[in-house]
Amino acid sequence: MLISALLTEIPVYYYVVISGILFAFGLFAVITRRNAVVALMGIELMLNAANINLVAFSQYDKALLSGQMTAIFVIALAAAEAAIGLAIVLNVYDRFRTVNLDEIDTMKE
Amino acid sequence: MSTYGFWFIVFSLILVTSALAVITFRNIIYAAFCLLLTFFSVAALYVFMRADFLAVTQVIVYVGGILILLLFGVMLTNKITSFFKIKTDVVNVGWGSLAAGGMLFLIAFIVRTISFGNLPWVKNAEKTNNVLKDTDSTVHSIGVQLMTTNLLPLEIMSILLTVALLGAAYIARREPVKGRKTLSK
Image 1: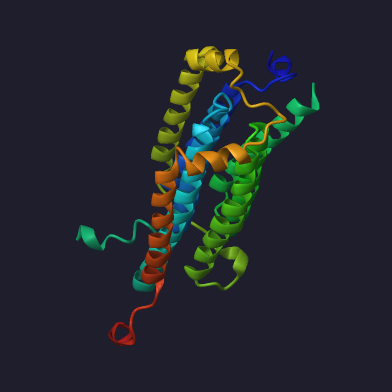
Image 2: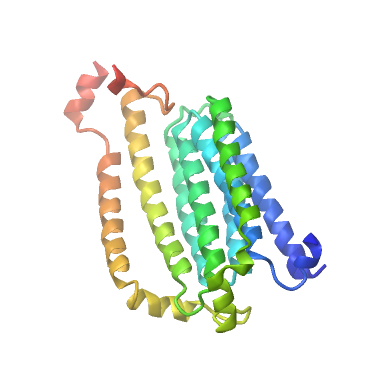
C-alpha cells in the first residue's frame, strides 16, 4: 500500500509525518544541547519543519498560494532571527567567556 | 515503483538521517555540516511539492546565509585548538526525549485521525482544478501575490530586516576601549 500510493502522486500526509519527525528532532536539540549555537540549529530545524507543512498544503491553493507566501516570510524571519541570535551569542561569549546555556545564570542570583 | 516515488523516498531518508545526525553528533562542526545536508533535502522536498521558487530560496537563504552564519558563530565562540575538536555537552536527555517523543506521538495521532486527502477544502480544490501541477511555475504567481495581497507583510518584512541588520551589527560590536580596560583589570 505504501509503495502503490507513491506510483502517481505523493499523499500529503507523508509530508506531515516527515515534518513532524523534523520538528521533534529540533525540539530535542533545543532542550538537550548545552551550546547556544547548537540550540539555534535546533530552532532552524523546527522552522524548516513548519515550512514543509505550509508548502505541502499550499499545493491545494494554486490561485492564492497562501502557504508558500507564509513560508517565504518565515524564511526571512529565520534569517533575521539567526543574525540577531548569533549577535547575542557573540556578545555573551565576549562577557562570560562561555556559551554554555546553563552557566549563564547571572540574573538568577 | 516510479522514479518519482523512488527519489522522494531517497530524499526523505537523507532528510531524516541527516537531521538525526545533527542531534546525535556532539561535534558541532559535524552537526553543522549535517545541517547543510538537511537544508538541501528540504529544498529537494520543496521541488516535489512543486514549489520551485521556494526551493531556490531555501538553498540561497539557508545554505548560503544562515548556515555560514552558524559556522561563523561556532568559530568565534570557541577557543580553537583543533578545528575538529569543538564539542558540545549534552544535558536534560530525559526531558528532551520525553518532549520530542510526546510531540512525535501527538503528530502521529493527528495523522492517523485526520485523512488529509478528504478534507473539505482539499476536495474543493480538486473539484475546481485549483491544484498545482508538475508543469506549473509558481514564480509569476508569487510575484503577483507579493505586490497585491501580501504587500503589507512585505513592507513590514523589509523594515524588520533593516532593523535586524542594524541591531545585529550594534549588538555584536566590541565594547568601547574604556570598558575593555576595566574588564582586563
